[in-house]
Length: 637
Image (cartoon, rainbow, N blue to C red; front, side, top):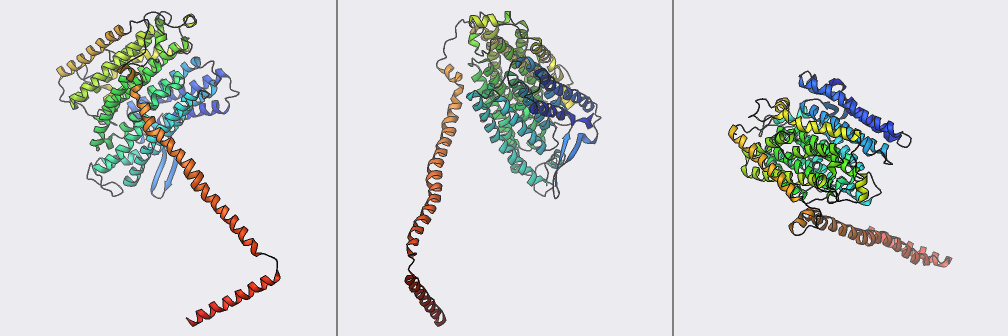
């Protein structure tokens, strides 16, 4: 099966080409079948490869050469795929969750005029993400990295007739390019100092540690490893929405809701986590950058969680929730808990995809309404959506027994072992998570309906194509945490044992069992308390406009306005100066001035052409005399 790994990205690529080239003539039903079927085929191959990897029967170190891509002297970059424990795990997440989202989309987007084109873009997105995680070197990863950036631009701005939506897509594209520049510089530093961009040749050079020599003869020092790691982290902040490059993610809600699930749950936003986990050998030699990652992750999770407390758009709550959960993943990466971070990537893919698709079911029933203040009491008409959404809320809040409980507990325990202060702030973020998610749940499904009579008449449960993915994701959100049980419950951390050949993980060995139980108990108790607080806070029939500090949170700490004031407006003024002064007056003025001078001088010179032969003869005589004079002077000297 490993030799068939090229089929995994090939199937979505074929789906993209078929739906993309024939989108005007392709029947809708066939477009949905092609779009969803290609992802299902990729999932089937990925499943076979996963079992091969799990059984340890992957040949040639898991590297599958497709063709020779770039060859310059001794520097070679093959187009090759790497099949190992980490890539196999992500393949299952991307294709599995991606297939459910495609199936959901067949119903959600059924009446959209761009139905076929939409599936073409979805397939392009999945193809790019698969290329990103399968690449055996940074160049192939970067191709997929840029591909998901392009596909996300197309999907976020899918309804391009709305100017706000196109602005959101451009914002996502530009902010990702800022991060991508950092990633590209990091790749250049690796190529120059290590003579390769292939994982199989780069990571072994780091095994000698600080002070050893690279294959290119360069000394590996902490300055070099920190510089490369910092550049890679900058790339990750863009793709995985960390401070300061996180503001594009909430605006990405402009795209169709299944797109939000695809981008925010299992795929694009986890690319940065995948890249850092894949490069763990490098980051282990850059402790200063690891500390920075932990601080940025902690700050991101707190700021975004606080913003989510006062958002009234159901998708905006989930968007800031995603940024916050990504902050937890980066916090884990920063303290060396790579397995814990990847564990949370997997559980987050389950419950966040569930929550986004659940919100899409609500929006579908509410005829496009996203303001939770105009909802309420929907659980009576939408029991499946209500129950599955509740399961997603319990999972993300870390309620005992659900998948998010185990993955978040592992992160919190590791952070506590590293820094009790960071743990306290991370616990505060977990409390806010429980509050804002259940605030959203109670505002949407409990109490009395607050919308219009027309909306009330239209409210109904979504069709099977939408509810079946919700049910499957709800089941995964319940049982998904069993592959990472804490040490006090099981001596076998299945995910940790599975990833051990690829990822070297920090484990808080000195954390006693009693302390683990205390940490779990404290986190669980606080989550439950915040659920009741959220229930109490949503017993309203009317939600007035926010004031004071609540207004600050509702306006997202005015960070977008700050960026607009210190970055966007100065750039606009600079561009206006360059256009109106430099372009118009200096450059155009210089060009026009040359033309005007030639025109003026030609007008003066033409007066010498009088047409009188006598004048010409006189000029010739004068010229000859001058030449003779100059010649005699030169001879004399």
